[in-house]
Image (cartoon, rainbow, N blue to C red):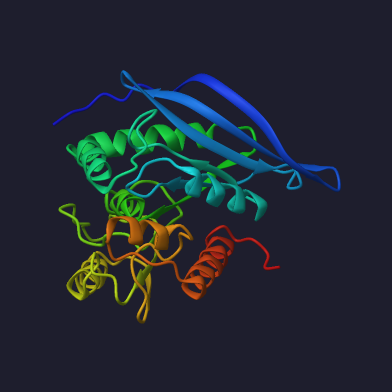
Amino acid sequence: MHYYLRPAVLTALTLMLIHTQAGAEMHTETIDYTVGDQTFTGYLAWDTEYGQKRPGVLLVHEWWGHNQFVREQAEQIAAAGYTAFALDMYGSGKLAQHPDTAKQFMQEATSEPEQVKARFVAAMELLKNHESVDSSRIAAQGYCFGGAVVLNMARLGLDLDGVVSFHGSLGSPVKAEPGQIKARIQVYTGGADPFVPTEQVAGLVTEMQQAEADLTLVSFPGVQHSFTNPGADAVADQFDIPLAYNESAANRSWQGAMTFYQEIFNLPSD
């Protein structure tokens, strides 16, 4: 099967300054861009305190869609010295408030693997072309649905230095071939996450060993799904689904990811 990817086209842009510190400014942009004939809305963040070109990090949202949580994560990554782009996998305006709608949006987005790849690559090219980014140093991280997306992009052999999955699904119909994966991989999962059972964890380890991939996997005992999101508990109560924020796991996985980026990008430690 063949697909045509039209380069991402910038159709609207809003620039905002978040804060000023010692002459530096945190910049954010809400960006409308197109892939094929559909419009998507992403969020770019970078801090001018880091004057030189720096690595770029793509973020892929949870199954709810491109929301405030993923934007806040982008700002934290920017504050750590990277340019972050929180992409949109569903299309402008597609933000779910109910699990049934989130499931529908996710199924529509993943109905064809080529479509997922096209949307990811368009966002990656947009990030690479930003004036603050060293286009030779790009990584990606995702949450839940987004964690599965970034793992699949690694499986497909995209030119990424690294990918990080936070409480993402680990199983996939896409299987990596030996020598195909270019990215180093980090996975953080909850040991009590019913959406990521033990069989998925074991299956990923076996798959990555056979593919000769560089995998680090951390499982937090007793931790449930969506452990990085402080809003998880309220959603769990509202819809009676097994989600729970865990501050320790969230902090440990974040620090692990930041150390990972320092390593893969050959950056000096703090």
